[in-house]
Image (cartoon, rainbow, N blue to C red):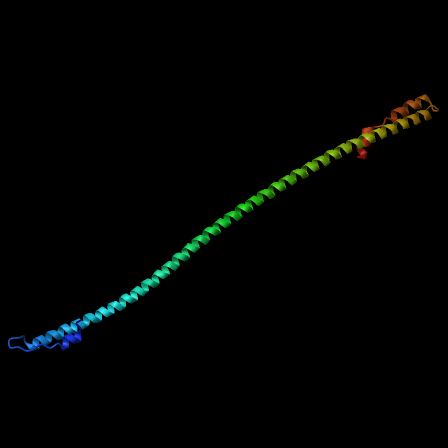
Length: 178
């Protein structure tokens, strides 16, 4: 049989002549019953507190797990974002290098084309100057021939003066034309 404060209070003993003092026994039993009742109440309160603490511990464990999961997800996300950013940066650098090399190559080709065009124009200029000199020389020869024919009719003295005056500066004429 399990003892309870109520059983202790209601417990009765047989009376005997040489037995214990009934009042003392009853007082002691009351004291034991009240202390036992206090202990039982304290035990129940402690059990309730333990249950509440266990519930809080469970809640904290759930929160801790959620925080750990969130932290792991954040770390994974951060790592993925960093890797993605590195890949994008690498791609951008490669694209920029390719574009830069294309621009340099195009500039070299343009420079070569311009250089070829300038050389071609120089050759054409030299050819035109040569043709102009040839034309001026031909015309000068024709003029000298005509002057010579016309001068035979005039005096020989006048002829010498005119020839000296007819010296043509071919280079000067070409320079003026250009």
